[in-house]
Length: 242
View 1 (tube, rainbow, N blue to C red):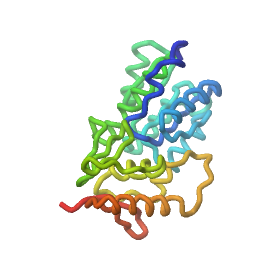
View 2 (view 1 turned 90 degrees about the vertical axis):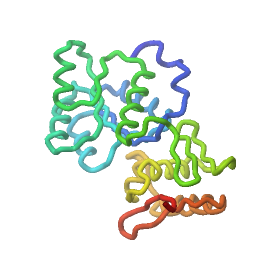
View 3 (view 1 turned 30 degrees about the horizontal axis):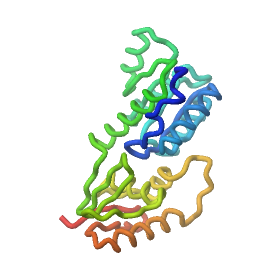
View 4 (view 1 turned 120 degrees about the vertical axis):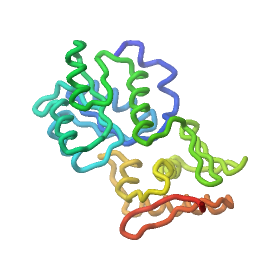
């Protein structure tokens, strides 16, 4: 990481989207520092010190972007990437490495990496690249979404119906964002939990249901046409009358 990356004002900006990230890095100092920066930017982050544990997380959880150091003990970042692509999974992957040789970058990209960042790097650049991969995953080029008469600004963290603002808590906005990014698709309870909490959090059994209930009430109270529907045994879907 570059020395000047701690005080940059861009680190204080809100992210375009709240994402669930996995950061696999064997350096405890870097793992804590970068992990903390990602959390402060509004993302939910799981971290792992090695490839074997990291791969277990990949197999058992859903992530929007994987940030993998190449030089890991045991299973390295390239081996993780190779396994992922052999399973025909398209999870966005950002590779980190101390090697600056062109052949190393080409090898990583040929293995299926979506992006490549050489150490030392500025945190601002890492955050920007993660954001770009997140936008590509959900095929959104801007921070603004519209569902029926709701206008959602993912960067400013605001929701408008006409000129009226909906006052949402941070948790309610995260759930709305999670659903809105996949408008018309069923989002499972576990996927919503992954957006709300990191791997170390203790979850209340009704945390998602209660947040959905409050969010529904606020949307309905605004007189909007948007609805959050429950799909029994599957999850939730947000939509508006066509």
